Length: 116
Image (cartoon, rainbow, N blue to C red; front, side, top):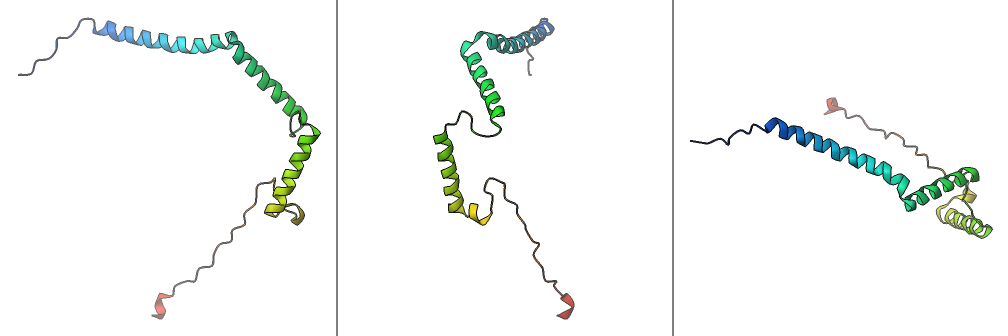
């Protein structure tokens, strides 16, 4: 004979307690992140720098941000070297654009089963 464990009369209360504790943990986790944003000075400094860089990048118009003439010259030389190495530049191929592929469908010879 198999004995069943006795049923607890506190069963509904324990599940209620578990759900309340779970919701409390979940809410504490969310509010801790929100509270930490205003309290952590390192994180605030990082976010400020990211916003500042985004603003500078937008005003630069797609070019390098805070680039000196030496850096721009080195970048131009590097792009020219890559163009010469991979066939761009003089041949009219723009290596900064994504290539276009033109695939042609192969011609398939029909199999004539009646000739056999």
